[in-house]
Image 1 (cartoon, helix red, strand yellow):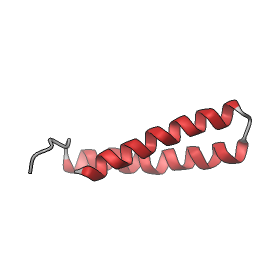
Image 2 (image 1 turned 30 degrees about the vertical axis):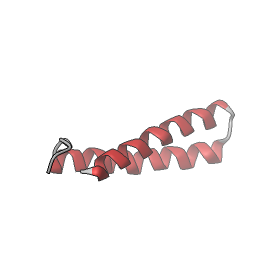
Image 3 (image 1 turned 90 degrees about the vertical axis):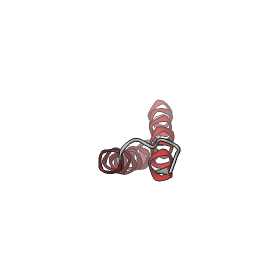
Image 4 (image 1 turned 90 degrees about the horizontal axis):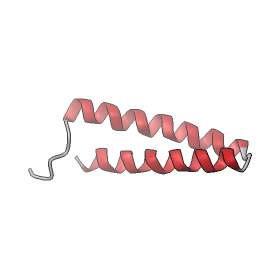
Length: 58
């Protein structure tokens, strides 16, 4: 279940990176950040749907 947490953290950091890159008018950085957000966000959501919410127990 740690995969959901890691994917979510990467997606959140990618969202922040995309916002920062767009604010600085860095289009290539924004392109890669939005792509990373799309991929890792999709994996986080689908893993959460398939495996459920992590409870912290076995």
